[in-house]
Length: 235
Image (tube, rainbow, N blue to C red; front, side, top):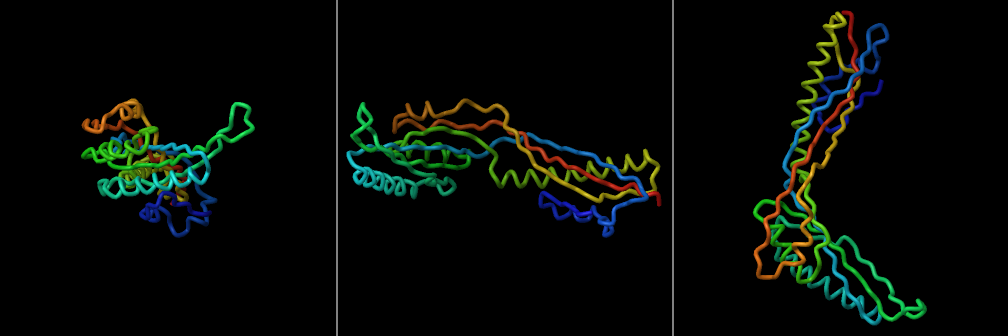
């Protein structure tokens, strides 16, 4: 039987004996699921920003978008080091007259994505500085990747501990001499719980000389579940 060690926890290999692929035809096979969960504070902000420009021709529009891109790049260099601003995409399209036969102008947009930690208000100040060039479309909160990895390692350890304990109870209930895992599948899930209302309306109304608002994320549930197949040995 093929061993599946999903989730990147190398210590799982110790759960599986060398003969696990040979199955346990003459013994009792059991399957069960296990789940552990925690709730953690969201520590990262993700915002979308959009800038719209118009021009009489596509050449003039591209020139305007290029100038804007250079201005945003220059502003991005002054942002706090932990705040990241990337160009997520751009698009342009013709605007027709009322009869939709003649192109009267061209319109284009640049779309940016900003990510940064909620701590120290760096992301909030960055959003305020970028508003001179773009409108803030949305502001969301999440758990950062580094925090997710740390939570996953902790939850996987708890999950394996609980699965071992459950397997021993099954062994005792069946009166088996010993028990061992022969297959382990792990999966991580994250469910977002209610967060504060979106902040984009407030940002659009802010003046340049106003202090950046304090942004606080909500909480997010993070869980690791496992599907276990084990063999209860007579010996």
